[in-house]
Length: 214
Image (tube, rainbow, N blue to C red; front, side):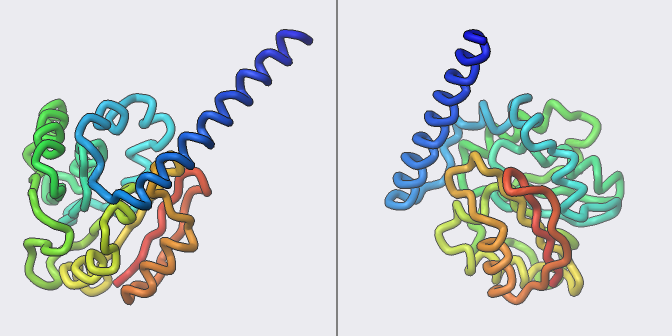
């Protein structure tokens, strides 16, 4: 019985620490908005994250299929890109866009670990407000724990709408441990305000994906 109570106490301390950390980080992010630092790639590309947020599941939820031209905005350390490249197949292409050069350098090293699909991946250093594509060219644009990191999400989504084909998909996935985590309601409201229609909602409050259609 004493051992059980000890375990409960430890779990309680962990829960309190997690809540306190989340509150602190969210307050900091509210007043000082900045891109995720490159060193957190250690967690972003870790096995722990894969268990908490299965990359293959996120890609399936995003509606990515063979032959598609796909863009990830805020690709960070590149955790999802090899799986997107795997999903688009030999006739498709997966592109990762990030504004931070140091993050893309880490992303390039990570992608090199996947020789079978790395030729289908292209990395782009650019602002989410200036997507380097002509109108109506992409099949899917997806963001994972990235939309609320962007200071002006509406401006980004306007660009996404411009570059997507008619009927193209915008997929927004979120992960509760992220300090910029928005609720599903907030994400849906952002997408609809940008002129998208909800096409699907998968996952749970801890880890969800909202899929929109142009």
